[in-house]
Length: 121
Image (cartoon, rainbow, N blue to C red; front, side):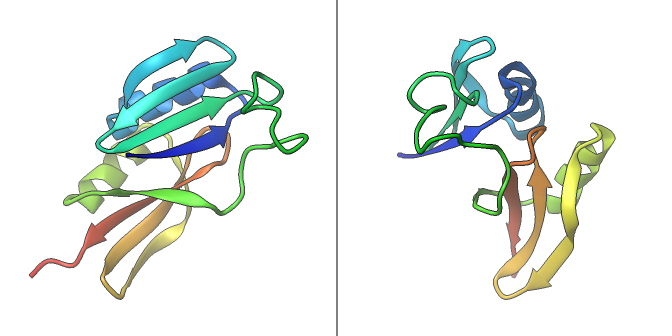
């Protein structure tokens, strides 16, 4: 199992975003401070800046950047439409090349999730 930690500005808003839009299950949730979310073989740890060891590691961590994890889907266009209907933010448009198509989605704090669909056939 792999795990990723994101620093988020609002834990509760981030939990709702990942749960309601990307099918993550809530494993632990300490409102305003920390959450652990599960999806397939990934555990996503969410920490508020300055909260606990994860929110303090490395000095003064902030949300955002270009590092990301990838969510593989077989229905990229359907997922994008659903997220746009939920007023989600994207970085750029769909890229189409190599092994498939991808688009970069931002969580409410600006952390990036790559949505990816392998080429069919």
